[in-house]
Each structure stands twice: as structure tokens, then as C-alpha cells.
Image (cartoon, rainbow, N blue to C red; front, side, top):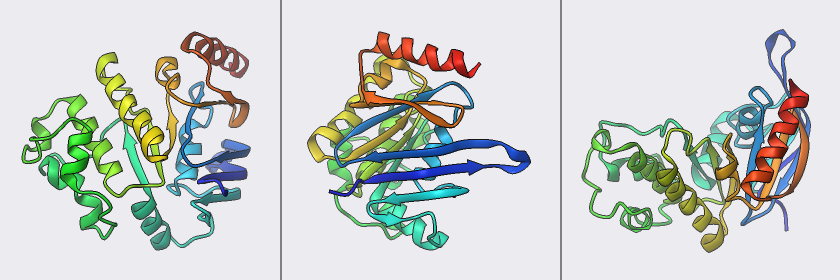
Length: 239
């Protein structure tokens, strides 16, 4: 079975010679939760953005649900992201003037598939009965659950999560990670998550460590303490 997310020898060079990614290869099958970690500037977010088609690699190939997105025109990549991918970011990226229901329904209003009902996903994330509340009135944890609901409503093949618990307290962060874990285990959604937190990474199936834009380690996820040790190791070498 072809990987849901596949990077082959991907490099990304920015102006002034800055190389954010160096010959990165990564294959993620359906129903796997992958955490990506590394020191600041190691290329974590660039990897996520290239994998999701939000950024174009300088070299190599990126395939998303079997399609080569590195060479797609922007309109087609946008449609593919809308229909097959969900996004959860630290900053929520919600429209505060809209209600919870309107935010969750936004992908469908933009032409995406109506794979699940808004009420169904709001119930799943624990926000039943709050559909008519303006997002601006919600707590940070509730807003992040709205973002998760919006990511789930199209029944995506993959969810890209960039520091999804970074602005949350540990208890609320655990709720978000539980929702992502359930999406993997129940619906076989692929999750690719960037995080700096070993406790958050411990929810994953697989840990990928980056150092200076390259994959330094890629193996099944250990416990949080071991993750912290490995992260210190790659960070020390990078420094």
C-alpha cells in the first residue's frame, strides 16, 4: 500500500543560502501517528509545510495520498489539501467573528467534501451544544478542539499538526492529543505532528528526530523520558 505522505530526497533552500532541509526521505502509511522533533532551526516546520504542500521543496519529490504535489499548480494543490488533509496549528487559525459551527463547516463551504456532519464532530471533540457560540468567547482549549473538529469534518486521510498543544496547559493538551490518537486508532487517519514536548511526542507511534535539516533518527516512539534524552542528544550535536 502506498504511503499517505511520502518525501523522497527532499531539500529546501531559502534565499541567502539557508538550507532548511537536506535530502530528507520519509514514508508515512495510513493510520500512523508520527511525531517530528528537533532543536530550534532543525527544519521541523519546513518538513511539515513541504509534506502538506504549503511550501515547495527546492529538490526531491513529495507525494500526498499518492499524488506528486511538488510539481502541481497551486490551485490543484489547494483543492487536494482542502479535500484530503486537515490542519491543526498552535495559533488555532479560526475566524473569531464566526460561530463554532460556522468555523467547522468552513471547509465544506469552500467546496470541500461533506464527509461528516458538524454536529457529529462537535460531539466527538466534546463541544456538543456550543455550535452557536462565537469562537471569540471560547477558552484556548475549546478553540483548539474547534480546530480539531474542523480538521476532522472532511474525514481527511492525514492531519498535519504544528505544535497543537504548545499554547495549552497539560490537562487541556492531553485532551487534544487524545482526539488525535482516536482519529488514528478509530478512523485510520495519518497524523504528522511537529512538537517540542516529549510528553506530547509520547502519544505517537513513531518518532523522527531532525538535526540541521536532516533525519538523525527514525524509530518507534519510546517513553517521554527517553524521548527527552534523545532530543537533548541531537540538540547538543546541533549546537
